[in-house]
Structures are given as C-alpha cells and as structure tokens.
Amino acid sequence: MYVEVVIIIGLAILSFLSGMLGLGVAFAAIPFLSLFMPDLIHQVQPLSLLLNGITALFSAVGFARSKLIDWRRAVILSLVTTTFAPAGSYIAQFTNQIYVWYIYLAAVIYMTYMLFKPVKEVRTKENFKLALTFAAPISILSGLLGVGPGFLLMPTLILTGFNPKLAAGINAFAVTPPSFSALIPHTSTAKWDPLLTIILLIVGAGASFAGARITSLYIPPKKLKQIFGMLILTMTIYRIYILVTS
Image (cartoon, rainbow, N blue to C red; front, side, top):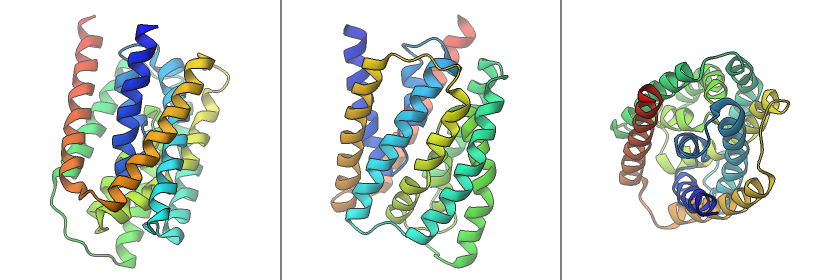
C-alpha cells in the first residue's frame, strides 16, 4: 500500500509539471514508474502511454480555455504523429530494454539541451513546415520509447520559432491521439493493475489540467522548463545506472 501511495503522489506531481508544459506525462513517468515496476516494455510503457494520452488531453483543455492552441497546426501535427507512432511501439516489442533506455537517455539529453537553448520567436509558415518534417521520425522514436512524441516535439516547436506557451498548447493537442495509437501494439502483452491504473488516470487528468491553467494564466515557462528538464535527465541517468549495475 505504501508503494502505491508513493506512485500516486509522484505521478500527481509529474502530471502537474508536465501539464504546465503541455507535454503529457509519459516522458517523466517512464523513469519514475520504472523505479517500482521491473518490466519496461509490458508494464511501464503501456501505462505511461495511457497516462500520456489522458494527461495531454486535459492539458490541452486547459490551454484551449486561454486560447493558446493554433487548431489548424495542431490538427495537422496530430495526423502525422498518430500515423507514425505505432511503428515505434511495434519495434519496441523486439528490442532489448537496456538499448531502449540508452536511446531514451539520448533523447532526454537532446530535450534538455533544447529547453536551455535560447531561441528567437520567428513564427512563419516555413518554420511550421520544418517542425512538420521532424514530426514523423519523432513519432516513431517516441513509440519505441513508450512515450508520446510531445517531449521531443515541444522543443522542436520552440526551436522553429514558436512562443513557448503557444508551442505547449499545440503540443498538448497534437500528442494526445498518438499516445493512444502507440498503445495499440502493447494491448496483447500489457500487464495492468486495474485499480492503480484508474486512480492514476483520475489523478493525472486533474493535475495536468491544473498545471496547464496555471501556466496559461500566471507562469512564465522558461525557468520551469529548464528545472524540469534537469529533473528528468537526473532521473533517467539514475535509472540507467541501476540497470547497468544490477
């Protein structure tokens, strides 16, 4: 019971923070849940993808209330990410866990670098086309890692010139459908704890919506993104250290 309480509290905090960034919680939930669940492919990834879809959805609702979603671009991105994400999930079924963790670490390092990198806001059609070009490989990679594409798509949108709050709103909507499509290849092999899953979904939905609303109304996202990026990098390095030394 103690472990379940820790998981619920930790997931609530991570959902709140990821909701503030419009990311969906999976990229933070993967290293966190792996501290308590030994099977990355059949326990952690399916649960993280389901949580990612729900938290991203409620985060999108929070940003939409502040009119921070460019719906045309968000819908176009969601079509691309939803189409390509299942391919990565299928590949994960046949990939050694330790290699998945190394790829995840590389992706997190990239994300952290992008969150710290200063970028000028230059919103042009050509920049969106560049983000759209990266959406397909990002989606495949995110499916392999068991996360939604948001944690890589968000810094990509910022790099291509979008204001961070607008990028968060677009990202939150665009990563909701692929989180569920990437879950499909896991359905026949996933191992669920039904009661814990339901509780986490409810807690994650509420926390992510609250996080999105606070960012929309009050919080300049720059410092929060940097702190959160370092937190996830630290958690991931720690998890890989445990895997290598165990």
